[in-house]
Amino acid sequence: MKKGLKREIRVLGVDDGPFNKFKDKECIVVGTVFRGGNYPDGILSTKVKVDGSDSTSKLIAMVNKSKFKPQLQSIILDGIALGGFNVIDIEKLSKKTGIPVIVVVRRYPDFEKIAKVLAKLKKKKQLRLIENAGKPVKAGKVWVQFKGTSLAKIREIVRVTATRSFIPEPIRVAHLIASGIARGESKGDA
Amino acid sequence: MKKGLKREIRVLGVDDGPFNKFKDKECIVVGTVFRGGNYPDGILSTKVKVDGSDSTSKLIAMVNKSKFKPQLQSIILDGIALGGFNVIDIEKLSKKTGIPVIVVVRRYPDFEKIAKVLAKLKKKKQLRLIENAGKPVKAGKVWVQFKGTSLAKIREIVRVTATRSFIPEPIRVAHLIASGIARGESKGDA
Image 1 (cartoon, chains in turn cyan, orange):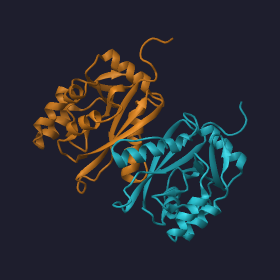
Image 2 (cartoon, helix red, strand yellow):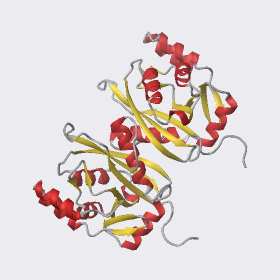
Image 3 (spheres, chains in turn purple, green):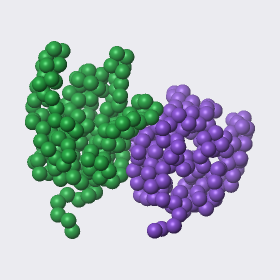
Image 4 (tube, helix red, strand yellow):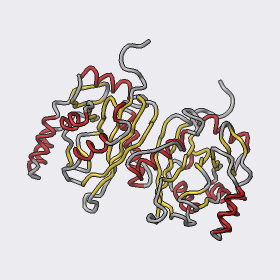
């Protein structure tokens, strides 16, 4: 037997769909309940306001009312914001659901640029949420920010779930679905 | 090397989402592009009219404009109708896309009952489409109707794609997605 996490642990992967920031008031958010990096057991969905501030409460509600909640060992987010600047408070999301939260990004974020843009838009609260998420660290081939568990555990979750690419499969598939539903055909990588 | 179809053949699985027949004019239709029974490569979507007659044309358009079309070796439908009585002309769907079409059902349909209901609703055309799809035959643990290829080939496609249950994985996952998007959380089996 291999030590560590079971390959079949259940995790939730979350991503938003594409939207037109000049036209759309809301955007779709898809959650995939995965068995490790293997296959989906269930699909959740909600909507958030484009550039709004409801992403944290919408995700908390989506997770807490789901029948899959008791089995979830982590929530993996494809980036820390949904619907543009609708930044997620990952500490609150982890506390209110009782589940570890992982934010995955491909490249190390340019925080200086992000801070400038948010300052210009007078989005102080969003900047604070990003800072509070912590400095990104490497996990496999991606960068992560996290709350609710240890880095060792996070690295193991990324390792177990990144089965088809270096991106955890639950967010790769959440991206395909959100994009395929919003556009009619999925496009690009998570 | 095992003889026969490769495990990685690309197939499209199609299912519709739940709807309220007294309220909803349209219902969502999801297509999953799968590598065999393993994992999704892409997601397509469209909408059809509840109890309308646009399902064939909508599916033809969805498939023909997709970048995945050249690789698709079959279209697997979860039942012969979408959005209630919006029956699919599977012969036309196969001819206009050039791709074999398989309708999968769990139980042998009660054609006598179906014919009575459709006659009562004066839906002669729909009844003709169902009859034209042919007598269901067994493939693995499910029943199939098909156009565009041989029964031997169909049986092999069902065998290769039914990896997690006795239902081909592309329609199991299309069902989860359509249901999760329409309801907020997926429910039941394909």
